[in-house]
Length: 404
Image (cartoon, rainbow, N blue to C red):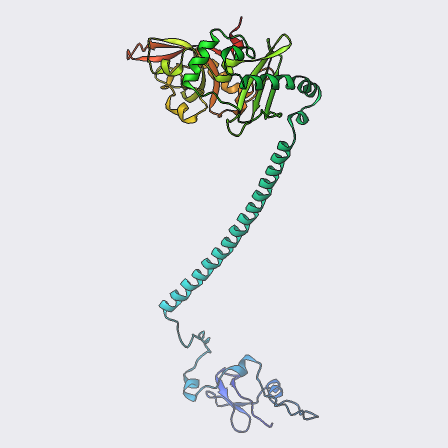
């Protein structure tokens, strides 16, 4: 044996751990008996000789658990009884708790920072895609608007409507242009429906309002066109655009073979004056008025039953005048006829059938047009005078609705 086997061996008789002595045998520390080293240990310790030297150093590495066990001192061998399990090896240097907490916080901070980064990139791409789609939608909308404006009213109509437009619009256009260039009441009356006391009304209207005149010729193509001949008498609603005087809104009805302008609807005339009536400048306590009805609020569980609160707004072209001269809120019993009619008017705005006025499509969505009979009355509870809606004559401003 060129090299003695290293390690601790158990005596086959008493089981005491023993070490190898000089001659290669094992002597038991307790019973003093000798026994030979097992052959399989010797074979592992002494490797076979290599036939060819490769220059590589080969080390004898014990592979059994017994060979891995370190040598024990004699004092340890004497005091050792049955072999005990070795305790787990502890770290040579323990990390301080403060440093562990510091590393833990740094890890959480890096994790939180990574989440923020991912969220930021996600939001960036989301808003970028939203902006791209918004730009595409806006461009498409503008293209559609330009396409619509580039076509004439005649090109947008079809079938019988187009035939009617080709035949009658030139006559209507001539009538309205002649009216706008007229100066005296007698000239105006040639192009309007019959109006009682036209001269007096024109003079009063001229004092309270400014007659809008054309800065140039009237456009040959209107921006709005509605034919409603299912009513009797039938009418045509038209709006012309004009850069200086604003849009001209007009209603025409055919009398014989001529088209006539509804003058009171065109100038939004009321009898008496809204200012005189609403501010009680004179003793006039009642009258018929063209107004916008604004629904302010309603309640189904009021103290005295369900109610509806509305406001009357004069139909001026000037929006600031509308706001400053609007009436005080009017409280209506929701079970009453007036409130029910107003509720229905707001419903009809969404889906009116053919034959009705369609000017409401161009009005503020919170307003409904109406021709109403108003009166000042004293409130039964407070004794204070207030405006009362006596009757709703029509859901438009046309005078023809008042004819028998």
